[in-house]
Length: 197
Length: 197
Image (cartoon, rainbow over all chains, first blue to last red; front, side, top):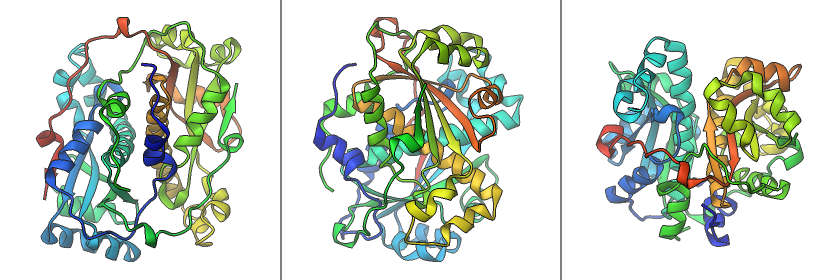
């Protein structure tokens, strides 16, 4: 692989993309949600563990189930977003490893025998898939509004009771109203965040 | 934002990108490492917390410091990779919030007063930044070989002793030898990983 993306693509993914809080009145179809998944699923995870799970809330009814778990400042923008995704992960992801990682039949046991390793692996790799999700959505022309400001336990009780799935973070999806953006916050410089050894 | 990436870009990022284990004899310059950071830094994190930290190991000496921490099956490919990045996160990321999130002076206290929230936020958002890192590297034409198969405690003792930085995962960087790829593993289908509500 030696091709690079052009400047417009890098702008769409990274340099000009912003977290949006206000949404244009333009719907997001189910086909586009499937396209996001069909891109992000290819991103790498440890032992192809693929622990990420996603609930796409598209209806008023589904959004109302989420409302009581939201931090107050996240309610309006979430209720108004065309779609809100609950990014989650399955602590029992290893049940799929005989199919997903068939080259090593021992892989299931690495995790089924160690709940701590399974939990760390699910959270780390489910979150990596959350990063792939955000960039896949942007690659398809959508804007994102990811959020950690909610009560994970309430979301788990409402949406994942009786299962091994845990909520991670939320992400509103739609077409953002760029006229309502806040000024952009700065980032750490290379020398603050990185070292060359 | 309403532009979409073209098919070639989606292939480079997701559909045709592979985890590589064998590397062409083609170096990766420091300028390219800086370019990766200058893209990934724009990806969203909670309250712009930006907890991700990266050590780029480019020299034989630096790689030898890593060797004892590597799982046996990760030694050869890592020692041969042009660059190995240690993706890490700073548990005291909140010290930078007065500058990174100046719109809310209370933000530092949310985390400085709750080590558990700080740790979860650092791990989640440092890992999201790890996802941005992988896709930024691919966007710049590089191939990645991310790995969790190493001893985090050994890496922390060797590279981050006396600091608040913790290792997360490793990622080899270079130009992969596509002739040495394994067959690709399958992914979960949309209906297995996602639900529409």
